[in-house]
Image (cartoon, rainbow, N blue to C red; front, top):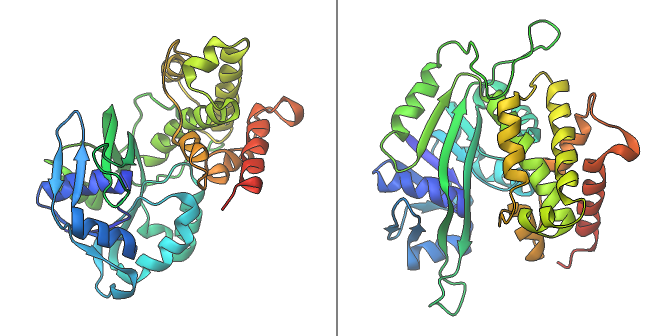
Length: 334
């Protein structure tokens, strides 16, 4: 299976590098600067699960893309989605499958409109990773993919439609009647097996995507609004209540869309969002601290658009956080 990995940043570099280390047929679609960097320094992964150094990994620039691929693995940020689509479009043939690893749901509508829903799987990853400059290197000409936690899961599957009005609402985190995996999902899983990360094929990818979103949105909204770690927010007066309120609002939105969160999953999420002393933050906060673009519309704004029966008006903590994020975008120094 020929795999085109769109992007070689923290996420694409990690999963693409692990696949390449397992001798899978992977090519990275990158911009000229990243191509030069990888050609000169290779792709390095630092992780508690084992380091890897891949000299001169295969790369291609958008203007040189001619052949089609079996799988396009999309790891860009949401604000780069439109340009990424234009860059990898020549690689999409009659049998190509597109597997996006973006957060939220908004990207699915965009990809469906361009390539057709039948080509686009649902997918998500659970990992904390960043591109970092080694301490011994005085410039950013060499960057390493640094895996920062003990989770490295890539999950994907077909996007089974759920109509809450026609069938019992399904619960995130609970065993469900999912049917059989499709042939193409099984084929992708077979290729990924043996690479040094957890591969989770799923017959109902939308449930998993909602599950991640219900945790990620409160994390991003809370840590960005307070410009602080979870531990520091919890230590402040009213901090835990703020995080709990954000979690409840996001859970209500999921329920209104036909994906209610089980009590077990909600308690796990709440435990992480209110853990005393936790150094956890969202990657969006790190982007703000670096004066970088952020995924405000994709992670927070789109949840508000899908609000359904969630709290409205002045009661919307998520709305306050979204206004804060958009104010940052308006004032960001380019």
